[in-house]
Image 1 (spheres, rainbow, N blue to C red):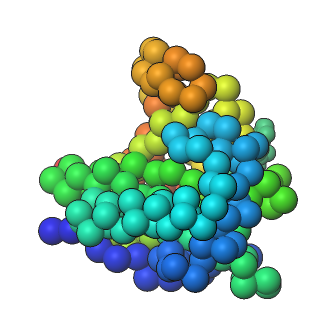
Image 2 (cartoon, rainbow, N blue to C red):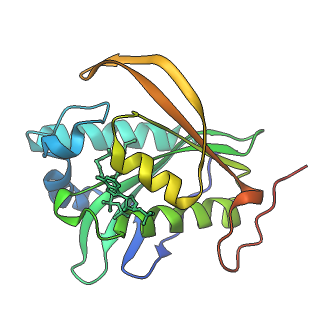
Length: 192
Ligand SMILES: CC(C)(COP(=O)(O)OP(=O)(O)OC[C@H]1O[C@@H](n2cnc3c(N)ncnc32)[C@H](O)[C@@H]1OP(=O)(O)O)[C@@H](O)C(=O)NCCC(=O)NCCS
């Protein structure tokens, strides 16, 4: 069974919803910024072709049934200000990996925390995930802080896990289990 589509998730200041072609102009601002893509596995977008190639790649993942590519829409301005990706869905283990990006002018306002928390609520409570995991470069202070602040557990370091634009670097591995997630109204429980 493919990963179920994510219905729009309403948080206080943002909505997390499925990406569409119309979002690419807004997302160009986000992903065209070298500060934003510094720790990401892809280069900054420089053109509409780069944006289109990204969407095609994400559509392919979604069609494989293993991913949901979402955007963070700022409700007051109706702008797409970032993205959340659920990927590497493993159905037998009810496990999925999490990634997220926010435009630089929106940093440090609690917006990523709001969007990622709402996505985790949805993934645990509506999609029935048992475990959500994430990999973060140890030098990425903001991302490490975000996950810790949400209650993800730092489970270990994978040494020299990646070689890429940032040279060779370690990965912090984080995980959160359904039974540990304490969202208001969420009855998610770890499956036996
Ligand atoms: C990671 C990212 C999404 C965080 O977005 P943000 O909206 O600034 O984060 P928030 O304001 O919601 O803050 C969440 C927590 O992280 C902390 N934090 C945010 N930026 C921080 C920084 N630069 N240094 C230390 N702590 C930081 C906040 O204080 C907050 O802590 P709390 O939970 O204890 O209150 C954003 O920096 C980003 O898009 N970075 C580039 C893309 C990226 O690296 N993605 C992750 C790849 S693994």
